[in-house]
Image 1 (cartoon, rainbow, N blue to C red):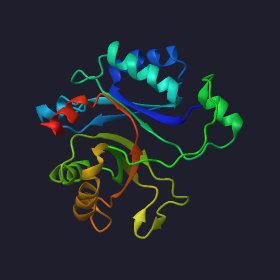
Image 2: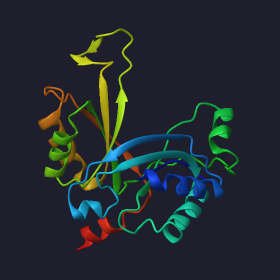
Image 3: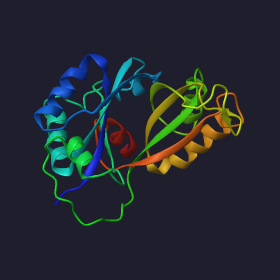
Image 4: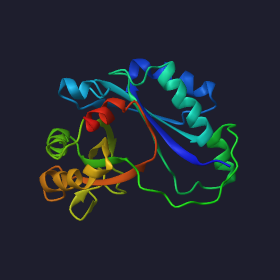
Length: 229
């Protein structure tokens, strides 16, 4: 029996090839890579591997067994808990579109579907804020005011069918920025509230924000130790 997870890994671009090589050794195929930059501004945030530098965001579908092997290798070989190396975390998908697609995404990983289980409370969550381009700073200022650490920014574009098309006053085809922030579950609501109050729909940033559960992490040890202290 096993479970499926979307593994997201964020690291400096210069380390991307080494990380991808490690994943491939364990049968995980990185299906999507996007590029962005970090948002951290302090030495403490730098130590979490999220300093303001060019980043690679890699995603791969992995089984629970594959993740255990990868997490062990990330800690032993990549030293992911060393400041500045990066982070990796899991998000549980709710469905995959067909067995053929699943086989492609798993790229040979052995998977036997287990009985469906109810997702238990998680220690971390991934906040995703989508906003107009150029408003990362006020969004991160708002997030930090409520206890967030650093984040990673990915540049994107809306897909409005016609030029100038809007929904509730928001341009659908405009240049966008996606800000990814891993937070402790206990701080989620306050951080989301701060973002919406200071950079939400009624502002020029026109940010929307939502969260996804994070069930496992690697590279977050310093944040955990800071909370314990």
